[in-house]
Amino acid sequence: MKRPGPNPEDIGPTVSATHAGVAAGGDIANVNTFSQINHSENAIVLPPEAFTPITDVHVLPDTTNVPGPGSFVGRARALKTLDTTFAREGGLTVQVLHGLGGVGKSTLAAHWARTRCAGNPRWWITADSETAVNTGLADLARALQPALTTLPTEVLRQRAVQWLTGHDDWLIVLDNVDRIDHIRPLLDRFTTGRILITTRRATGWHTTDTLRLDVPDENEALDLFTRILRRQSPHDIDGIAEVCAELGHLPLALEQAAAYCAETGVTPRAYLDMLARWPAQMYAAVPEGGSAERNIARVWHITLDRLTDTPLAGASSPGCGAGVFVGSRSVNQASQQSENAQFTRV
Ligand SMILES: Nc1ncnc2c1ncn2[C@@H]1O[C@H](COP(=O)(O)OP(=O)(O)OP(=O)(O)O)[C@@H](O)[C@H]1O
Ligand SMILES: [Mg+2]
Image (cartoon, rainbow, N blue to C red; front, side):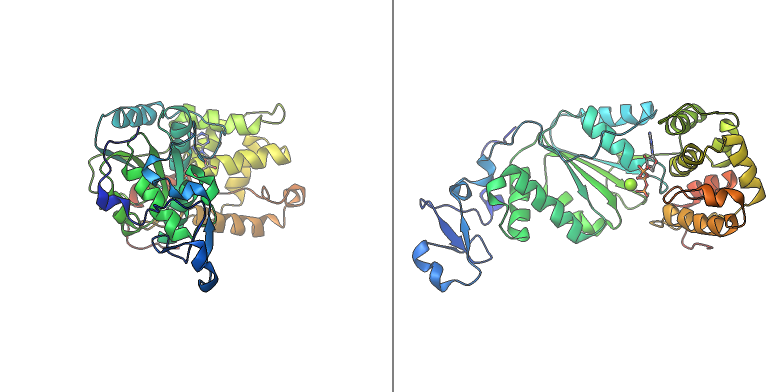
């Protein structure tokens, strides 16, 4: 929904002219007519759409780049929390979703945005750097006005921000926020709309709407493992509960283990045995903003090395090449410590 009467200060470098064509040298605010193009290096010819004030641009139905759909299990309570937070009327709603790397924050955010949010646009922005945020906003401007895709990124970014400032029925997912100052200018700018943040960072958020996502419960973990295991063909699930427990119910680890079993034909029980016989060490503490995924990848390599002596190593395929050992105690400890730990003991 368009908000009435955009604040002139929010309009910024909006183009207004009656010409059918115009050139802007890098900054859309510096509009030149065709008579001046010859003297303007790097001039950009703008189509008539450029003359519509950005706040008047109508968003096409279902404008979204949210990833998916993919397989999704469980998380009923967290989904409900997001429903409740974002059902609030008026103002800007910011919900922070934090937790250990690989616990399922992005998957949950994408699922909620795709299936339970009525806003338009629903826009996914990778937010692990300032550049990434700006690129994501520029992409939104392109989606709003495809005819203007060739404008410089900074101009597009500003147009997206102006559009968002003038409307309220939108959702922006800022995925994988590493540093708050990467998104602080945005949070300070908006007074309406919905922002869903995923991050490994638990502290420093100036909102009471922070939701910590823990590892899924046993039923959800079993469901996740089984779906991947049986995606292609029937598969023996004996030992699955033990494997899930051993992996601390961490979705990233479950996914890797299930994919390995599915790919190689190893049963979960045999996989468990491999974990016991060729354990790689997973150190517990993951620093705030640290990468559990990287740790797992490291463990994966260690495990790969060990598996070179095993018959199974030859049977594995790239991307699903080896068992991964993540002791359940390690994962649970990492889950508890990740948001406060200052050092990693890798
Ligand atoms: N509810 C779920 N249903 C199905 N699969 C899931 C679910 N949650 C997580 N996964 C799977 O687990 C893996 C890790 O999840 P995801 O990438 O969402 O974690 P994350 O918390 O965003 O991690 P990071 O902090 O590294 O970004 C994904 O590949 C995803 O497919
Ligand atoms: Mg993520």
